[in-house]
Image 1: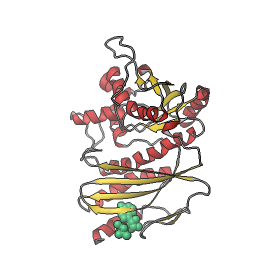
Image 2 (image 1 turned 180 degrees about the horizontal axis):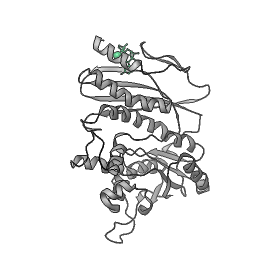
Image 3 (image 1 turned 120 degrees about the vertical axis):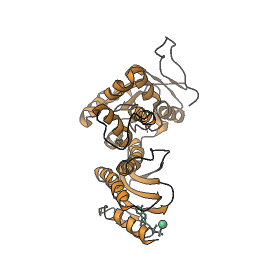
Amino acid sequence: MSLAEFSLIERIRTRTHARADVLLGIGDDAALLQPRAGEQLVVTADTLNSGVHFPAETPPYDIGWKTLAVNLSDLASMGARPAWCTLALSLPDAQTDWIDAFADGFFALADEYGIVLVGGDTTRGPLSLSVTAIGQIVPGTALRRDAARGGDDVWVSGTLGDAAIALRAWQGGTLDVRSVADDAQVDDLRLRLARPTPRVALGRALVGVAHAAVDVSDGLLADLGHICDRSGVGARIDPERLPVSAAARARVGITQAREAALRGGDDYELCFTAAPSQRSAIEALSARLSLPLTRIGTIITGGGIAHGSDDDGPRGYEHFNEL
Ligand code: ADP
Ligand code: MG
């Protein structure tokens, strides 16, 4: 370990807090963690590569935020309580300003969601960030992809398509990921891409209420498709019910906004299925969390996702076999 590497790790270590379930954190060869008695561990890992998962010019604060957010989102979709994480950093050079801003974004989320950084690795190479996140859950209660049942309602949280619209605007040169946009709605879209909110409280609250859940990282059709495949069911989606934001509508119009909601990725909302008998509980949950929860369709027996007609003609429901 070089001196530069040591001082970078030190800059990160000083941001962490002691907690009773971390018996030994950053500084030894490995961490010692104390799980809650009788609970199961929920483990996930996600890597973000510069230029692939985020524009290379993304500010370090936003990179730090998103690196942890995408992992917290995976814990959320399982219904888990976040506990610990590790961070593997590959950095082209050891700039302390960059690390400090990255840590500001990373620990803003870590502290908010009670996840403690307990170790990691720091190497020189192309910019790449990899987190392993560990949560805990009561045995038998995780929200799995394979638990949807025919007749379930299909729900999504928040709004969909915003991040994809922001990404397209960046690709088209009309949105700058490096700075606050003058137009408040454009800035809403920028933040949806740069700083997604992991739906941790929702995931926890859906334990015992929802059957299956997934976080929308690759796009609704793709991710709901995972639930359908794993559960051996299909789904029918009503495109007119898809929750799209005012900012998305203003930017691209309702037709493209719905298209982005169906296919766009990177929103990190939760898509879940639940019995119709849970509707009033889910509506109460939406009010309690101040988070829109929208019923967008139904789980059906038989495969594929039917998602309505195109605006240009009454073609009925289309099936998606390429997913
Ligand atoms: P080793 O060579 O034994 O793997 P390292 O020199 O890589 O140890 O790391 C020293 C300590 O710093 C370890 O506890 C490791 O978990 C921690 N660490 C290294 N890089 C990071 C990082 N990016 N974030 C958090 N902890 C880190
Ligand atoms: Mg090491």
